[in-house]
Image 1: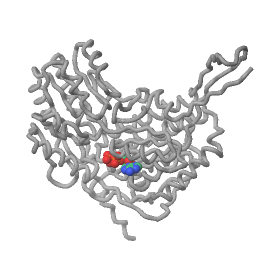
Image 2: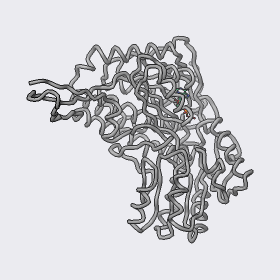
Image 3: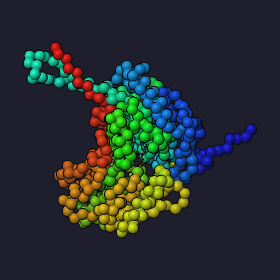
Image 4: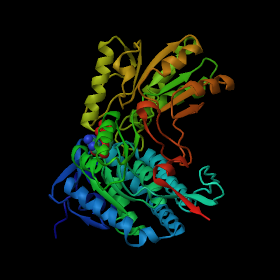
Length: 507
Ligand code: ADP
């Protein structure tokens, strides 16, 4: 008997859990109408391990025809079958069961996420997976609480007539959901949770860089007992599968998370049938440190505000405004934090920062760093790719940048922060708001009035005071300006997945 040769990832990452190895080696297909099927063209594409650049698995490449099949399945599940007649309580229980299953498979999902995305598995296990579980549980609770109002109406032109008027919230319908690669499982949860709580059906198109955790989630969705076609999952590229979903005439709503540039394309594609659109897009978030802040907390937090997830967060605190009196101390402190960060593959328990997700991202981030240097900005620390295999970039802190430079204006999506001094608090609102984005902002001060006053003036969907990157399923998240349309999470998201119907009865 000859032993089966080991896959490269078993050699490179000893002690990979057996269930992860067998998942990676399984046939990866798309989920349509409750069945795992090959794409219509039978085409496949590779997903890479960003720490080595090697192929982790091959997945089905969905095309417009697969999108069409998935939309048909979602439409049929929305209109026929058990889903539309299920009670809200039954729907809530299914979502809760999915949360339990994700929790039961937390270790496995964290490893899959770490291998495919590059993030440390400890981070995936401590942040991505538990937040996904929490989101599903939070949304499971909402399924039974989606209510309308009774509305006293007067109707001046029908004197003497009496009416009973009320509103009901109904599912918006078939939802196309397109998600990015920075938090693959969590973004799937953010999208699926509210759609399912509201009784919608979904075609989820995952990012081509990180398809794996959503495929495992799809298996758990089936195990939880969701009726066929309620959730359909497609792996494929943005320009093909994503574009076909955004423009599909039988999709009622498209929800997208990704770059502002692609967000604009989604809006154009959605215009054909005027489908509802929500967008969670880019950011260039200001993080403001006043001299009276608790610096021993603000400094490591300012570092983590930008370096968490390797800077691949739409809300990363990439413009660090620091009051002049403490500028050198804060910059040196953040640089010191950057120097201490251990770069390595996500599998290594010592790793604090993994590689960027792809070669394309590596090149993009390095290009921004070069533009910064050429423009006269100076990296106090980092400022280059880490030598060797994998898509690693050194955590980088720039000073001496000018307001119009690309490193100050554009979303880099890598571990790069620009530190900018200010003299007077009155400089902050105009400087911080001088961006096309408005996703998030941070404020560090012990003066509570100053903090609230500034929070009021910042054009941002989330303002963190004396903290950063604090997320909760109950707290709405989304952007002002070109950072997006609508909100995710919290009560607010339910409006994005329901239509409001007014019913008026003459008594
Ligand atoms: P990034 O630039 O960070 O990779 P993108 O905005 O390009 O982010 O991608 C986010 C998601 O949008 C991915 O699932 C991607 O496949 C998808 N996408 C990219 N281009 C399009 C498009 N033209 N239409 C629809 N979806 C797209």
